[in-house]
Length: 119
Image 1: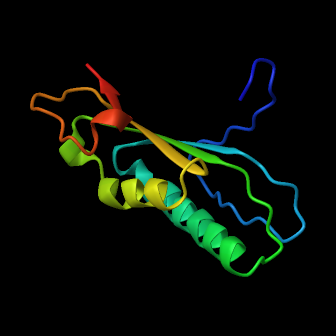
Image 2: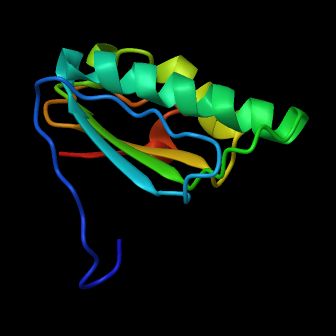
């Protein structure tokens, strides 16, 4: 987002992301805390599938970028972190993530360090 951008925000409840071929591309910002990552991880996997199809066959989907912000107490409580890192590596610039930890006591592994902020 840039200054003065219009955004839509939805907290909890029934939500999904199902772009159709021919829709204008949208950039998504997904924000998760703890186990709240579950539905957003499903959306992230769906987007990765669409990016994969788009690169392989040209399926008519025009996709924007996805930025995931995901917070937990520590890195051991970041569910799906290896999968998320894999998606970022597979789709650089299209899927990005910033992990935030609030109570990390131990050293953060090298693989996660560039993507983690916290106290």
